[in-house]
Each structure stands twice: as structure tokens, then as C-alpha cells.
Length: 270
Image (cartoon, rainbow, N blue to C red):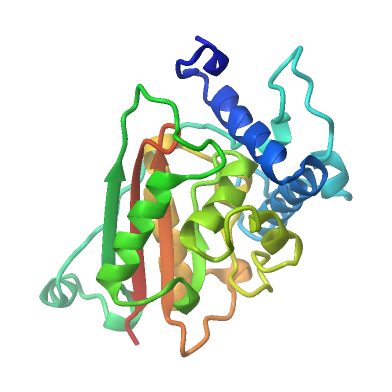
């Protein structure tokens, strides 16, 4: 591992995203940003409590935000993140079927039980380079822009989002990268309750990487499954309301420190 301060990337992901958090604090203020990280954690755990397969399903902590505001300890972890700011990496495997309308018939699946892939965006950056601006997720922004444009919709048309919150700072930066809040205002957007399950645009409704878990290679498919569940009304206790005029969901799956990203727009079929 080498330090980002030395001008080279730190290959320790908590360290890299801690650097991003530090850059965000310097630009936009630490106190409010830390509160937004804690709110993101609270929302993640509250959503995970509604999903029996989530790692945090049994989390009974009463004051989640107070726990998440535990001060980072750079002597034992990182400068700007604590363990509650981190996702839970675990083992996992998953599979998904992508078929045509004829394929649905052959599989015996009714259109109402499927979702349509409406747009896809992919972007990649130099794995060995430091980000141009650590307080931005530029590769996420580029992939999402492509996906939304190919789907013919805007961020305001989305009913729900599954974003790659490997760390709480990635959740805040993801809100900005999608275009739901201006740069530096993602923390406000979260603190105003807009990403909660009863908010303007619910994020990570089964807990995301922080609440549900992060089985690395299987994470992207789980995001797609969660969107499928929500858009088809099969999410059980985690179900949110999908407005008729907003039958769309978005997934964002990131590799590394915003180095490679796939964004997918889904549409409710019926």
C-alpha cells in the first residue's frame, strides 16, 4: 500500500474512500457531511431490517445515527471513516436471465413478472491514476448519463435507485453523480430525507452494500433483483410505492475506486 499523499493511488479501498471523504469535508464542511454519512447508515440498516436475507436484518441498535457518528480513529483504521461507514464484504453467488419477449414465453414467465432493460451505460478510467477530483465520482456520472440518455429519461423520472454504497461517502457522491443534487449538496439531499424509503427517491431499499451486504461479484445481480422485486411488487416487507408516472429503476455497480462502472435503467413492463 502506498499513500495517496505521495501522489500514487492507495490500493486499500477504505483508505481511498477515506481520502474522498476528507476532500469532501474540506470542500463542503465536516459536521454536516458526517451527519449525512450517519443518516445514510441509518437508512441502510432500517431497510435491511425489512429483508430477511440482509446481513443487518437482526440489527437491533436503537440509535443508529449516534452509533454511526462514532469518531474515526486513524490509529486503528482510517482518517475520515469508521467501520459503520463501510459495506460488509462476504461470499456470494448469483445468476440472472436476460431474455427477449419470445424468451419470456418459452420460459413461461408473464410480462408482469419481468422488467425491461431500457438503457445501459458503461464507463472506465485508469486504475493506476488518482481521481481528478476526489470529491466527485466522475466515472459513475458518465455511466449514468449514458444509461439515462439511452433510456430516454432523466434522473427525475426514477422511482428508486440501487447504488454502490461500498462506503457512506460513495452513497453521498452517488446522489450527486446521478444528478439528483448539485455537487456539494448530496449531504443536504440525504439529510432532508429524500433518499429514505418514504422519501422523494428511495435508495437501496433492502439495505444496499452497507445494510444487505457486499458479496463483490454477486452484488450487481442483487441490485438488479431488488429493482425487479420493487418494480413487480414482489419486495415483501421492503416494498415501496412505485408511482405510475415513474415506472423506472436504476442500478449502479462500481469496480474499484470509481474505476469501472455499469449503470442500468429498468422499466416496469405492465
